[in-house]
Image 1 (spheres, helix red, strand yellow):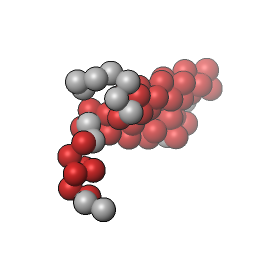
Image 2 (image 1 turned 180 degrees about the horizontal axis):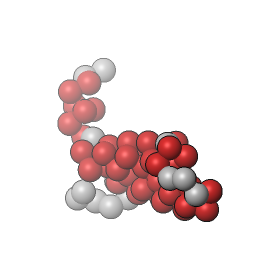
Image 3 (image 1 turned 180 degrees about the vertical axis):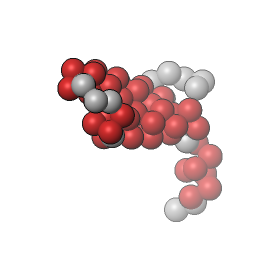
Image 4 (image 1 turned 120 degrees about the vertical axis):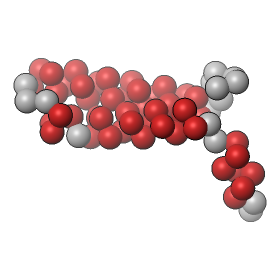
Length: 63
């Protein structure tokens, strides 16, 4: 398998959003003190990760 072709097809914004969302969702307890805010940050992180995954799956062509 030619890994250079696979890596060239990956979208940099998609990878960054997926990683940022995953880190935000998993580290929400460290980022905020309030439990209500923690839930909101975790949901926001999951939404960011889903957006990054959608970009990687070419749901939005051209990104």
